[in-house]
Length: 421
Image 1 (cartoon, one colour):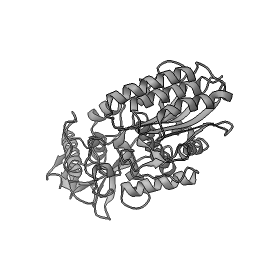
Image 2 (cartoon, helix red, strand yellow; image 1 turned 60 degrees about the horizontal axis):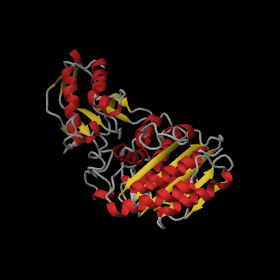
Image 3 (cartoon, one colour; image 1 turned 90 degrees about the vertical axis):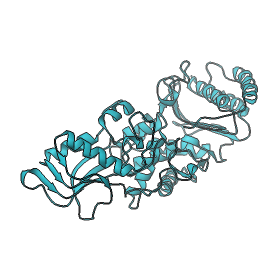
Image 4 (cartoon, one colour; image 1 turned 30 degrees about the vertical axis):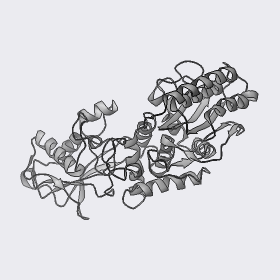
């Protein structure tokens, strides 16, 4: 998610006008019969570059159609397409592997002769135990786990070096919005062998210049901490084709990775995931190829055409209409992975990017959404379970707006939807 910078004068004037309109248009509780008119009265205040689409997911009946077929900048609503495609490609419990490979075997006295190759598969969570615990609040497979596996395999000494292999991804460290260079907004350089999210230290004050060498050095350190000698200095390189797996750790399952992406709107994890999808499809991990896979999957769900340029939504080239976003949501709901997908979204007033929004009123705890923010753009798409028990799917894509005022409109709209009796 990226912050916005707008004119204070314009923002105040817009907000005041919206307050008056919305207080008149949105009562505490509504009936579905007049909900559409009330929502239309609210979205009208967002200007001509915004659109919305609301559907009763149980009946398929549209409740609001407001400029709903015009593609809009998606911002982080792009992550809905990224994670949906990842569920399709990897499965709900699919994982991403980080492996140690080698040519040879453990010799006398536990000596491994030759290099060990640390090969990345695009896991955005791979790193040290201490960093992962702080970053994710829960243990994830770590470099220390790999060192333990190698020790359990009987290795007591490496007569060689650890070589980091990031060849699974292309060499582009960022997305199209940064000219493919390392981006502050992504949060670290992209690499198939990402370690601690590409940060140069655990305090996060610098980026890694060479992620593959950095990760190789950390595995070397972890081995030495277990009393396993490594005779040569680590570096980057590529594992030979005949290298066999000696040890491996796997990422959390895809349903947890989707939550990591969607609830906090994690740009780094989203970009890693879209590249990993491309790698799994049989090529190198490329942002453009992964985005194309996501767009193709959306089309299979009836949610195309969608124009996708990256995995996170940082690029303004990511565009789809509110109608297509809702089609994606409804298509995912009908799949076996529909519930995990829905659970990956932030809950109004409770967690993720919605923890400080809609903290009271009927929307709290009843609405789930993916937020999206760029300068002049605010997006909100997801599901609401109304007081009546009906489930609604919605997409509210606002372009050319003051983001604070836009969020106010969005929140009032969700309160109205959730309040239907």
